[in-house]
Amino acid sequence: MRSRLPVVLFVLMMLVCFAAGAISVFLQGDDKRDTIPQSTPFESIEIAPSAPVRSTAVSILVLGVDEIKLEKPKLLSVWFISFHPPEKSIHLLGLPTDLNLPNTEIPLSEVFSLWEAPDYGADFIAAMDFFSPHPIFGIAVLDEEGYSALIDYLGGFSLDDQNYDGDLAIGTLRLLEDQPLVALKLQAQILRALSLKVPDLGKTPELTPLTLLLPENAYTSPSPAQLATLASPLLPLQAELIEVSILETTP
Image 1 (tube, rainbow, N blue to C red):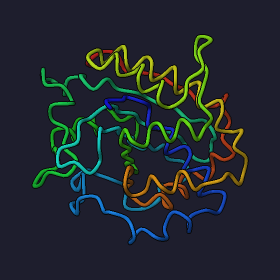
Image 2 (image 1 turned 180 degrees about the vertical axis):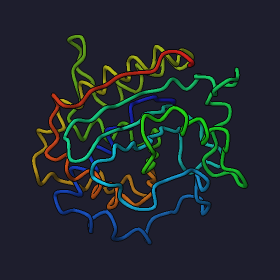
Image 3 (image 1 turned 90 degrees about the vertical axis):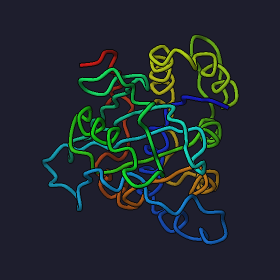
Image 4 (image 1 turned 180 degrees about the horizontal axis):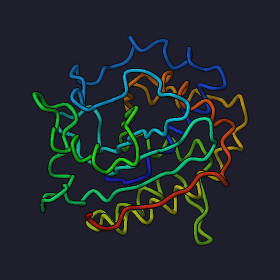
């Protein structure tokens, strides 16, 4: 499957779940699962070493790949989650995967690398620093196997009078595989539709379906618990305070 479902919802869900006191559920039992490659992705990216001052705006980089355990995963989506603690507003900015690196004609997708040493995609990392609205505090990666599970967990969504579950959403987005900008615009529509449902989950949602995504289909740096602590002032999430936009052209 080659989906470009907006993986930013995975991070939003983590924030809800950890703030509900579920950190231990995610951290236990990992030794019984197959592990992802032992390399650490994005070792050279500048991530804040500690929680920023509450008056400082920050961004979390959220990437979608085809399969996280592959030696060379394919980049499928790029989103930034930005917020300014203690304000509750959230800005989501999406980038097309064929967006050129600054001052070049080389698309992001060609220089992306998740696990490959020694530079772990240094040009891609530099581009993320360039395009990020604010200093990058964290990174989250989700592969396509988790897309359908996440959208089904949220109960699907409706778009243009059509009801979508995970499989149908993936199939629809797959048709746009060779049109990154058009796919990104559809991602934004889906993201808006799904964000309306996040507040309905309540304070103590059933987390079992999400625990299965770690570490097989998801990766975060720093840990999900640290990201959740950073974003705790955003809770409870309010759909009307979530703004979604995309970057359409190369600066």
